[in-house]
Image (cartoon, rainbow, N blue to C red; front, side, top):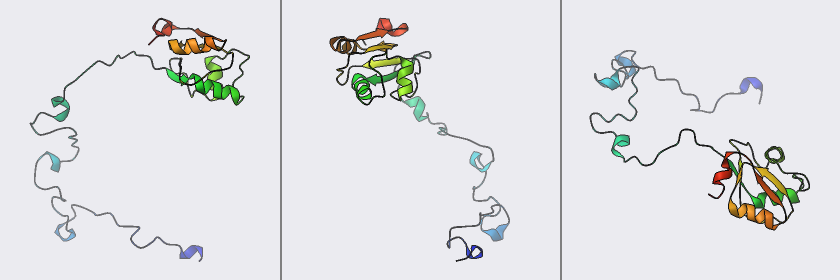
Length: 160
């Protein structure tokens, strides 16, 4: 095969149907849009419109409240911290900060802070400094001989 012999497979390339170009084309006059009405005109977007009937999004009940200024925390488990210490990606001798967790790859980004949960076992004696932690997570770190420092506004609501 030579370069000038290259071509598409049969049926891979189809010509665009030109609408509104006379009766002989098969899509002339109204161009397949029917007669009159909103949908026959150009520049019309009617998403969610149900033609006089109450739209679905208005018929469904609304519940709850979405706090506009809520905080989003990066969440991680103690078992993963231990796994990263065993793999040598985190240093258990030094204080484990949020920046260290991001640098090790355990957390992708800090968001509004990092919150530690108690899933998994921690055996190393570590000092962790994060935005928040659950009560069982704090207890587990203290039981292993370490310390878990909580800094920032989540300290009051650490027992969620």
